[in-house]
Image 1 (tube, rainbow, N blue to C red):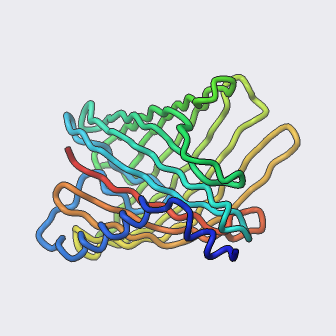
Image 2 (image 1 turned 90 degrees about the vertical axis):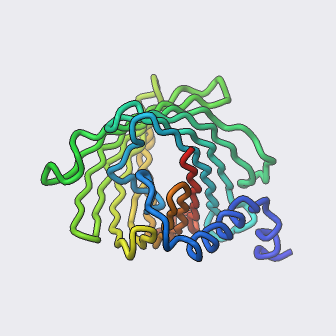
Length: 256
């Protein structure tokens, strides 16, 4: 059986559903307004938090095949709720599910995660907008340690153009020899308030007691929004031999 036919049998219906919704929203979005937390990138976080008292549901889907083996693609699904504590500070709870991968595993619950973001000022008030991000992860495999992830999110709007830079650190608690760091750089253009196009490049670096390994990716993204719904979909192509073949990600957001 070819890699193509094997990959077509992976349980990727959620991703296909998101793509259909993107097409539908593009055709009907002319009268809508962009949502406050509309995402534009595959990896990079932008300068945005939920408004005070607002609740949003988000469904994330990712596909990542190792280089040269589409049949071993790992498919990750995240179910997330975001709530605005203030206009500058929000909190999120999400559950992460995985399927596929080298062992072709069936759908399984992978982890709980809690995330919080805080914007230090109003957009455009400082020369560069600054936001802080903290995430705590509890794997369902209870022998595994908690993980912490921190982000410094820097952004600058230039009319319809926007630039973002994310500096990211990740550690397994009480396992100081295992840590990761990441840099995400993205640029977006707002065609109309309902439609954004973007491109980004990112690197993931893993550090262990034996040394470090790194991967690099780059690719485009598309984001579409109405008053209550937004959809983002994008791809990153692996640029190094140690990178996966590609990463696909889509996010569907509902303003509740």
